Length: 510
Ligand code: C2O
Ligand code: CU
Image (tube, rainbow, N blue to C red; front, top):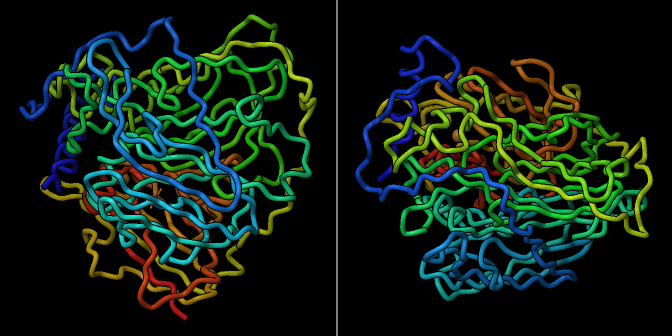
């Protein structure tokens, strides 16, 4: 029922900007009509110096992973608690699953919601029946028990609901969790890996609250939250030891991109992409992370004095139109009467985590290796087939689509031969940027029409940013799993766009 609304509002926002003769979204003061369906939010300043301790999700290790998704609630603000979803009793989000490459794992997911769900193992190279996409529905009260061998490299992955037209809602309610895969190659390296001590998981997602304190979740307009939740914690702070610290970051936002860096502009090292270690640490001061993407970084706090503090921030102010989360202005929206797609955080620089520097631990890693891996990436010389997929639609009255086809369960959009090495060119010529995710494979980004592929995204990827007006070329090998009946998904990882139809199915056939 929401289909098309987002696209048309987006177009309206774009036209407002064009009419204003500016590509900067910060100065527009135009407003769009309210939808009339949402209780106004309580406008308060999004910044304060009162911090809450960062929640570190508990871990589950071994080869059997039992997850139960259920309703919960969390006290985010004074007054009423907020209704949420969580796995295994968490009041938002879920436990971190730690798996070893090569293990055969048994997953058991119990659905205690009153609605169906699915559980997708994002980034995993597994058979389509085990993937947890829209096809592997778990009815209320039912248990889904896929089993598979963990084939992916050591890195940070995640699980989340993927039921068509429910992904946005269930993610917004808090359903999701991290997966850490370990392998011998990564274990042999001198890297921080004490979970919760010098190896910190960070999941970023923001929410808008109604005056009732419930999450505002109108898919047509609530695509950017007003308040950042880091691991489900508002105004999060953590004490980190005065040493090299590994930070595993997931952008679990609905639509907002995060241009991440430290408040003192210090250089840090990117060590992994979505699907494994980079060949070498990549020094940066900013890393752009789109919804669905993960990156592990190492920040060196050894030169910081105990008792000092710094902030991890999203430098999202001043981006050009098409940057997800640049729309609207930072003026306080009341309900949805603010600028189209506005939010308190849009087009601003805001805190992700306040870091207090504490004493070093006895196991501090003094320096990280100059070489991390020796990846053999696919190149154009390996390619056996090429295809081009265009992002279309988004104009007034229409949802975003791939190749003018809104997602349908009964349509197979692409068919790939098992063992093909394929070059996929995704083009995006209208309206807005997106975050594109392919199931089944880890790929290599070969080129971007908008400029060079950044060294920090030069590794194995399963999700990538496609800016407005750009095309991106990736190469993947589709190996090991084939089926003429069970499809994998490719889609925009903005769950509102995905639910509205910017998703397709591909078969890998023998
Ligand atoms: Cu993270 Cu198809 O999803
Ligand atoms: Cu999108």
